[in-house]
Image (cartoon, rainbow, N blue to C red):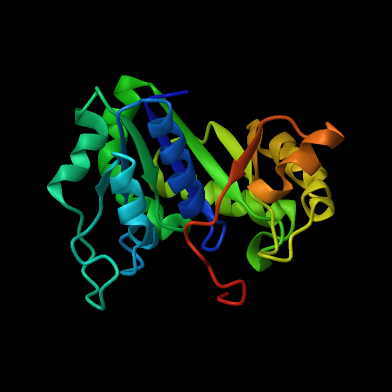
Length: 224
C-alpha cells in the first residue's frame, strides 16, 4: 500500500467510484486520508457527488470550487499540492479520463517520482466501447502515460455492465485482463466487483485480489 495511489483510465471506466471506495477503505483502517479530484476536463467533478460520505469518514476532499456546477473553469485549488506535500496523509488521486485529463497530473509528477511511494493504476472496463479489446485498451494506456509523464504500476479490472452484471460477466474478463498485462508488462493488481457478487466470485477461486465496492457514484451505461 503506497502513500499516493492514482486512479486513471478511459471515461466511464469507473475509476472515480473505485477511488472513493479505496479512500473509504484507507480511512476505515485508521489512516489519515485525502482524495483529490484532478478532473479539469469535465466540470462536473463526479467524486464531489460523494463529498458528504467522504467527509463523514474523516477524509479530506480536494477539488475545484466549480465542481458540479455549470461553470467550466479548468483550474485546481492550491491545496491540491497536499497530494505531495503532506507526507502524513495517504493521498488518493482521481485523474480525469484519457490523455487530456492526465495532463492535470503532470504538475505533481516530479514530486511524486522523487518520493517514489506511489501506485499509478489503470482502470479498465472490457465492456466499454472504446476499450472492448485489449489492443484498444493498451493504446489508451499509452496515451495516458505519455500525457501524465509517469509509468503505470498496475492494472485494475473493473469490467462490468452496470446493474445487470453477473459473476459470469466478471469471470469472462479474466483472460482480457491477463492479456493486457502481458502486452503492457504491467501486473493486474485488483479486480473490482460489486459487493453483492463478491462471495460468489470468491468461491470460484479464479480471481485473486478481489476488491468489493459499493456504487457511491452512478454512471449512465449509455452515456458513451
